Length: 80
Image (cartoon, rainbow, N blue to C red; front, top):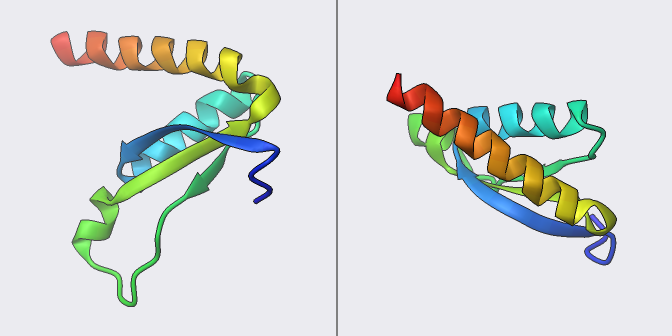
C-alpha cells in the first residue's frame, strides 16, 4: 500500500467488524484497505485481533464523518 495515498482511519477489534466497516465505506464510495498482522497459525483469538482500516487521503474527512455515524448506529443498537 502506498502510504502517501492512504491514511489510517481507525483500528477495530476483529476481522468481522473490519469487514462490516469496509463494506459500509465502499457502499458510500470510499475505498478501504484492511491491514491485520499475520500469525504463523490460526487461532480463535485471531478473530478478535486488531485490524487497521486505511482510506485514501483525499477521502479522510468524509470517511471520518461516516465512521462517526457508523459508531453512533452501533451504540444505538447496543442500547436496544
